[in-house]
Image (tube, rainbow, N blue to C red):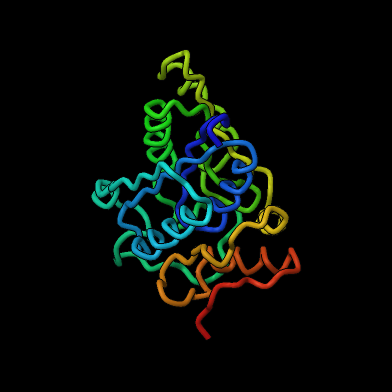
Length: 223
């Protein structure tokens, strides 16, 4: 709606960004931003992004190529040198699927686009309850918002929002179900593009989240 404020939503195509978009769809018009950084499932995530943008009838859409993150490396999500782990992660240790300082890079583009569009919000589906990624902590986003205030036009008053930050995966699934989030259009697997592997950390969290919420995950998994 024309009289609504505009929010730039970082949409990977996964479960969390889908639910974050559903939350802000209640109050804002949405612009969808997708970042390709040579992740293993880049093509599948792009398809999920396009499907979600269609579902939410999003007008402004932007996909940005961050190929430089492949050059930096340091993660199992890019390339084949480091395998994606399939066992349960060790609590309190940063997993090899962490992409160094990824969220700072992604949010920088989100804030820049928000300033260009005149949006007052940048939305990311990060949550810290069951994540050991250092750039998913509430303190990181609080500090980032201070930087945004110093580095953007004062009249824009852009704020980075993390509507899922305090929820675990079960809580995210439950919230998304209440909002009618299109789970069937999302993709979370770190390494497969046809049927989700069901073994990587992201698949494990997703399946546990649906189980905790008492719901069945609508996407297909490998036998």
